[in-house]
Length: 570
Image 1 (tube, helix red, strand yellow):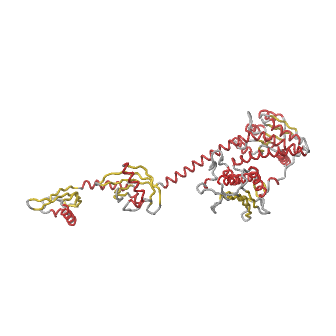
Image 2 (cartoon, rainbow, N blue to C red):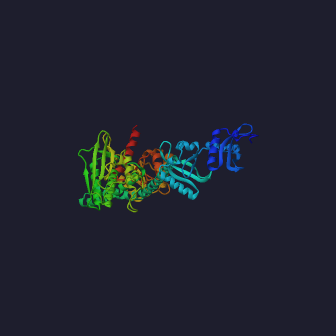
Image 3 (cartoon, rainbow, N blue to C red):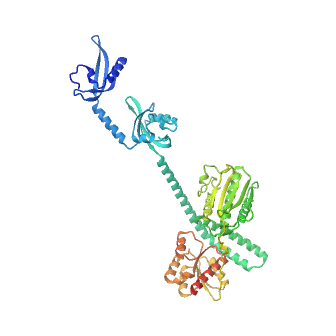
């Protein structure tokens, strides 16, 4: 190894290393595994480990030394370090007791900086003590979630996988740390998308349910509404008229409820017209007052005179205000906190909007749930006491009107909802549109098809009173047969019928009776089903949604005849 040297001093590259070695040897009497750089017989430097002991030999103090050439081991260590430093992961070796960093890959240093102690990694220093205790007990940990602090001082959640090993006679932690920031953000986004998909599925199911219910209810409601309105036009007895008014009002209320829920499902207003804000608020307050179970809560109104009209569906906006007042009343009652609800309105002329405010002096809405209050089916009420549809309904209806609804919880007391709706300035109400009377200077013939006999006969009776000659059939097959043999000026068709339905009738018109397309309209109780929506959109034909009033039917038929006259004159 060294050749025929005469002095051990010749083996040392650095004399200071030998001095350190001798000093330690004299103090302890022995040295184990002392790392030095030595010169071999060819005068080449090589790493070595020397272990020595002082002994007495023939009355003289001498050193007995064993030497190990570490060249191969050091090359292996260098290779391992090179591989580890090139490994694309945040790997760390630290002393278990002290946290001293023995080795860190570039990725780990990029995350935590060139730290000398792993204690600086932790957002809460106590977390390391718990982590070390669990690691010593288990020997290894996988994906332990810990809050760390990166090199820039940013707190983040990381996943730490580690193992406890013995290295050079000490407990050493070998660990890998992953920054979970992007993973958690992605997970949160996926959870939101999953929840949104779930809510959309529920709303879709709700829409299908409402469509089915509406279809079943609208046919009998059409009969009640239509006959009651016709009786009002025919009866002069005031006592009988009172009863007819009650029947008519009840039936129309049922019809409005059905149409309101359908509007919620399809997210669009049924009928936009010029609406008096004061009247809407007064109606809502009266309705809530009739059904209120608590006489200790007062509902106050603050509406200035000369408020501009709003462009809205009066029934839907009334229902929104009713929902908000009822919610406030329930919150005040259940909490025992608060005694009044104030409904006010203010004009915002610069924005062309009107603001309606519903405010109570109750407990308010907890901050934790405020972001979720407009989610469909989210409710804090007990099972059976709330569906979670109310505020979602309000939100959808207001947005469909081109307005906004928001929770204003700035003062920390009570609950305040603010609704803004476009004013009716510059807009024309549908009620202001001139109604085309059914002019019958000559005899007109109409064909009506509806599988509900009572509904079809009612519509036929309305047109007969206007001078029409009306054929009423209950099946699509018979309707197509009549179209092939008789000339009709007006054709009114139902959509959902057994056998030949509205789709097949439309296909027959396109193929065999194209001239009838301009004379055809639909009267249907189903405007929510996918097939019905598709047909109404594709055909572009006019339609009425059941229940239909006599005035609406006359107006529809009048427009069909007027359009035909314009085409013939043109």
